Length: 264
Image (cartoon, rainbow, N blue to C red):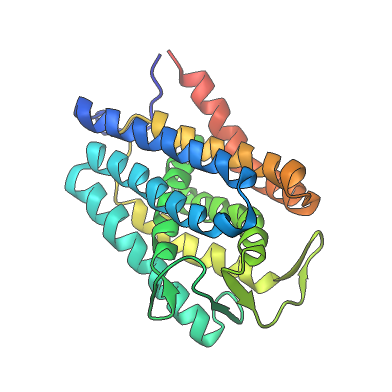
């Protein structure tokens, strides 16, 4: 069975077996770490979250580099993290575009007031979100960055309540907020969409049709399903489970259907 990313004129590109094996190792490690997260005690969750981000980022970077060579390494490993750091630096100092907030040191060392792992988180999820959008959208390719941005914004419906509970960052202004997800300003989600759109546009530099979707598909769909489950069952957050489940499902479900149709 083969899963092929996107639809386009570019020929498929193979990856070195060692890179594919390393990618799958990192994918499995990411899933295992995320399974461990809700089972860990409160004192260890912040450190576990940091480790998970690093491993997840490496999984995305290895896949992008294996199939897109230097361009994948440059875009996912450097450009997207720089965009993420810049957005978070401006956001945490000016309140634009996310709202007024500040970081703590719960996620590890800070660089310019931003935890080092946070820019990696933009890349770790940005790349699978782009693969999902590129696969789900066959026509009207100009919509791909918008779908990428929507995925990232929808993911934050799960992420922000969890990180606030971990005291990874603190909101100064918390209203108006979204029904079911209290104490996180609506402006934050607009900021996520705006930055996600820039990330999606940059990721369009990776040629269509060049990579197997299996690894990023596993990561993306796992994040979607596990986030809904964890919010509803382990963390007793029905609001994020419902809102995030519907919002992210608008990309995740067509993506899963497209993979099913194209299998074989």
